[in-house]
Structure formats: structure tokens, C-alpha cells
Image (cartoon, rainbow, N blue to C red):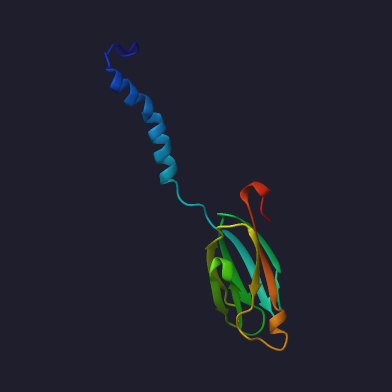
Length: 135
């Protein structure tokens, strides 16, 4: 018998009721809105990306806003399947991704932009969540 209500509950009913808070907690977690992506602004200019290195965590949603400071450029990060043209004029190109594994991955200019095009590189550094906070 339930000492608070005076109602006799079967063993099965008591077990079911005992699990209700857990079920409600799991449902609340599943219903939570997804995390907003971290915004990182990048400027492409002859012949560099600024910043030249970006650090993110495995599983962290990321939104890049990439602008050109001069002519047409491209941005390519093969490991996270990013390849976009960056037009001249300063309008940002929005790129969303979530890295699935830790490591150092090159950022390349994928549109020929002049004699030093092959030297236009950056680095995506993806750290495991336990490695500390991302920059």
C-alpha cells in the first residue's frame, strides 16, 4: 500500500512508476534543441587564409563565414567534405560541418588565384573533447 495515498499498487505498477522520472528525463534530453554551431570567420586573400589555423572539437557543430578580401578564391577541407568557391566582393560564404575525428587537416585554396596559389594553405585542427576547450 502506498503510504501517501492509501492506494495498494502491484509490484509491476510500483516498478513502472519508479521509472517515470528517468523516462521524463531522457525525453527532455531528446527534445532539447540542437546546439548552435560555433561561428568562425575566415578571410581569404592572396595568398593566405586569416586565421591560418582554426581549432574545433570532435562533434562540435561549426559554421564558417568565409569572405574574400580581393579576388576569387576557394576553400577546400577534404576530411570534412568542404569545397566552396569564395567570390570577390566580400559577401560571405556559409559552410557548416561537424568533424568526426581528431587530427590536423589542410585547408587549401581550390580556385587558382595567382602565382603563389599553391602556397595558400591553412590548417584545421580537430581535438578530442577530452583534450580541453577549443579556441
